Length: 194
Image (cartoon, helix red, strand yellow):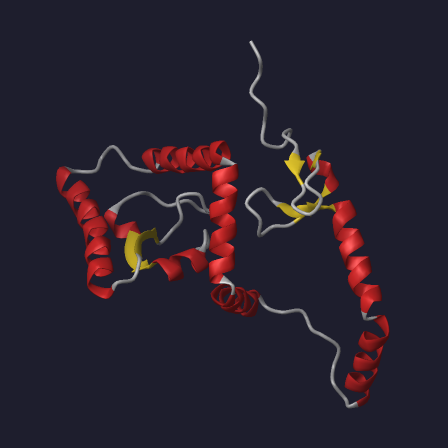
């Protein structure tokens, strides 16, 4: 019997060069689903080097003038400011991002289905057996409320878990007290954070 391939053993395809490479050939990136950047180390280095040398003199002059005027060197940005920046970047590029997601899902149907299945299994495992029929009805009504909000406002609404089912440090339950109806846009920018 063949052993199942672990996620960490499976090769990854570089989005820049399109070559399938071992996972060790990619830089770590905590914001990505698999914890790795989308392009391989070789492509990242080449892109960074090309960008550096493309406007090298202009960049040097810009920084000379900036620091001569008393400006401070760039500071480390807080997580909250980074979230705000990422949310605004998402809003500016929303159509392009969604088109890319749709393209990826159509080209990688098996991976997309596996992710959906894993989430459903997590939700099933996070639904306690002690829920009463009344509790289940309240949960169902929250999903119904999201649909009504969408119908009334013309915007998409999600039922969100306040404490994520698959959080990094803590995981919530699929119970009515852990559910909230929020705009889909807000839910997608929130991601899996608590």
